[in-house]
Amino acid sequence: MPRTTFGIPKPRIRIMDVIKLLTAIDFSLESQGLLGQSQSACSITWQEGKLVDQGVVFISSEDNSFKGALGIHDIDLICSAFDHSARNNLPVIFYLNSSGAKLDDGVAIQASFRKLIKKAMEFKFSGGNLLFLLGRNVFGGASMLAMSGAARLYSDNTRVSMTGPRVLEVSDRDSKEYVESVISRASRVKADPGAIHLDGDGVKDVGELLRCALFSCEARCYEEFFSLSRMVGREGFSSERVVVKPEGISCTGNEPPTPVDLLTLISAIDSWSLGDVIKIYCEWSSHSILAKHEESFQSKLLYMLSEAMYKKRKSGNNIVCYLMENISGGLYISLSSGSDEIYAKDGVEVESLPSQIISTIKKNEKSSISSNVPCLLKAGVIDGYF
Image (cartoon, rainbow, N blue to C red):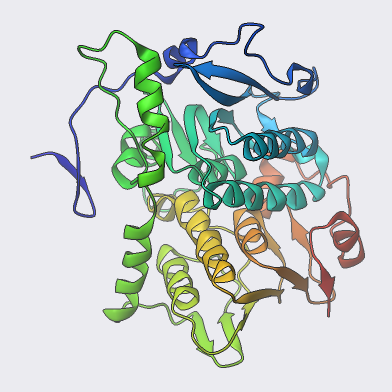
C-alpha cells in the first residue's frame, strides 16, 4: 500500500535532489530581472528567469551557516521579490536553506518576520504560486516561511524544525540519532500534505518536472489539518488551556503550547461566531523546544495558526492579539502575522528566540535592541500597549 498522511495516499516515487532542478531555470541576459537586488552582506538574492518558456521569480538563500540566517535586509529583499511577482503575475520558486533569524539584528527581526509571513500569506491567497525547494537546514522562522508555500520539494538530507538540533531539548531519549529522525526529510514528508515527490524515471527534461511541481501548487492546501483541529474539538480532546468566552479567546498558563493546545486554538479561531472582533489573550511563552512536540511538525502547526487567523480576517473578522506575558520565537511570529493588531501588557518583553536557545547560541549576550515595550513599539514588534 502507498504511504499515507492522515488517510491521503502518498505515491511511491523516486526523490530527485532539488539542487539538480535549479539548472532548469534560464537566467540568460534576455530573461534576467532585477539583478541589483543582491548585496554581499546578504544571504538572499532574487531575479527573474524562464522555466520552460514561463517567466518565474527565483529567490535563493546561501548555503552556509554564517549567511544562512535571515536578517532585516534579507527579509526586505524577499518581500520585494513577492511584490514584484504579484505585480507581474509571476510564480515564485524559492530555494531555502536557512538557520532562521539573524540574532545580531536584535528583537526588531521579529517585526521583520511578522511582515514576511504576512507577505507570503497575501501572495498565496491572492492566487500566487509559491514553490519551496528545501536545502539541508530549514530552521526557526525560515521553517514557518517554508510552510507558506502550497508545495515543497525536500532534498534527501533536509531537516526542518522550529529549533535547530544543536539546542533541541530531548526529554525522553537523549540521542542525536533520535533528534535527527524527528526533524528529518522522511519524518516531515510523511506529515506534510504539500510535499511533492518527483519521479525522474522516463523523463528527460528536469525543467518540465519542476514546472509540473510549480503549477500543481494551487491544488494543495492545509484543509485536512484544519479538519483535524475541528476533530480535536468534536472528540473532546481539546486543551483546557484554551478558554473561549464571548469577550475573547484566552491562552492560559505560561508554558509553551503543546500540539493539542495549538490545534485547539486553531479550532477556536476557525469556529468563532461570537462577534466580528476576535480578541486573543496570550499567556503562552514561546514555541516548545521538546523533541516530542517537534515530532508534530511545529512549523506547520504555527503556520496553520497564522493561516486560520488570516482566513477569518479575509471573511470579515477583525483579530486583535494581547500579549499578557513575555513571549518569544515562532509563537510570536504566528500570532502577530495572523492578527490585524497586536498589543502588549506594559512590562511584557518580546525576544527573538526562547531564552534557552538564546543562552546557548549567544552565550547570554544581550540583543542589540531592548525588548521593553516602548522599544518594541518603535521597532514595529507591537502596535501598542496597555
